[in-house]
Length: 309
Image (cartoon, rainbow, N blue to C red; front, side, top):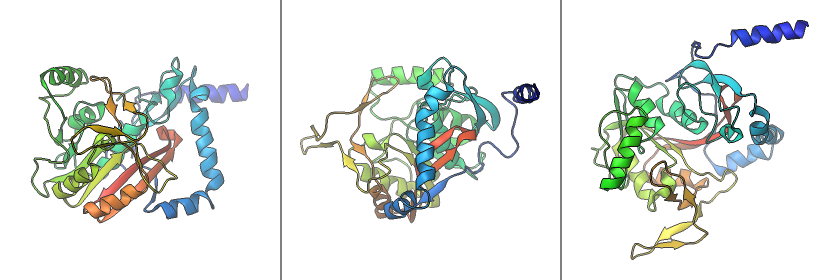
């Protein structure tokens, strides 16, 4: 009886939408970071082996554990008490592409990436750029940061119309801008932060994109990336590449990633730890893979890459 009364008080105390002091845009996220494959593997195979293995098991079991009941927690982007996922849809508890906040509708991957991107930045003055404009992440950024910009690629008339409809349905304002991340129109040193979330794996010449990101960032500016990441592999897996005539050579069976409008985009790479070296060669003075395990925030071992110009 005493336990039942205590559980009831807890349920009444949890009111979705309640602000949480110290949480929200600009606040630091709990995370671990490594600047080399060797450093991570030493930890993974040493002192943290059992901890990381247990966390992996938690992530694997979460859909089964949370479906039918739901998951309560704190949204780092909204700064409030919230609920993650849909109790009636087990797939909505996928630890990377699911666990959408009931308020902002951002999934776990996007919440972590945006949190790393805007940490400590002034919403009134920070100059930010996202490589995917027609996205929930950009709409969230646009609504809170005065100088947020984004772009899309390959906007023929039909795709522009479809993507514009999607963008406005999400709550986005203005027209879509077309840009090639390997040839950005921005001036040198004109941006404070760049976010590229699950885009780089679709760019055949991703090294050119990294050089452009470095060129347009101010000294000390930051880049945050999410990509398919092979956390135990030193080298990037090349799935496809372009031939000299522009045709695609598939080295592995084609992998198509979902797109809300066009239906799918070819994935060229699953990145390894060598992406850190590519960033340093491109002009970044510091690069590290960041891992967030914070169940209270709906983060169950998410990876992102953070680099400083």
